[in-house]
Image 1 (cartoon, helix red, strand yellow):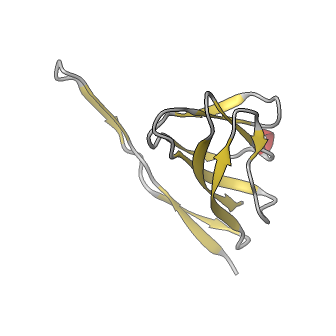
Image 2: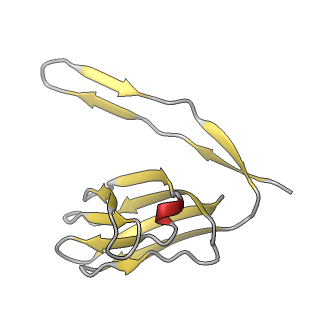
Length: 123
């Protein structure tokens, strides 16, 4: 049996001089082989900590959202690893495909603990 996930998004820019740009990729549908995912809210402290993965062992697409109004969160490929995203305060988010270097991702808040919502699907 196969399962499906849908990925979509856009990025738009506008300034006071009237310049506007946007990129709106086509929504796409992916078939995945297992019905494993994790969706939760996790408190992220100022010391890096592993992102809770539940039973997902083969990571695929993920969405991370920063729920803190003031502080940002950095996402790393592993403990002490390279940063692959910064979640700005007040709803900053990232939708990424977690490749082979980020199969045990970590997060760290910059100044004070933050709440992060996450949704990760298996490949």
